[in-house]
Length: 97
Image (tube, rainbow, N blue to C red; front, side, top):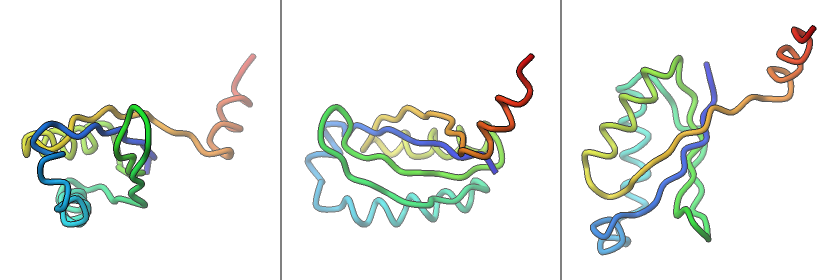
């Protein structure tokens, strides 16, 4: 499984219904399962981004499916970053010439 850090910004709709953010986090976990992914953790953040879930997915297509479904609900806009653990990065570095 690949790990992704998802950065989310609430839309106007999302901030108007901020009291539902905990319910939406639970719904995100359910949606992830349907897309073949899993949400390891959800963080609410200060600054440019409002939410930063950590998601494991088998591939980019599964994550994209999840994020398109989330975006279609209209509460958040997302960006995703592929994250590498120390072990994964070590394997990458070992491949260097």
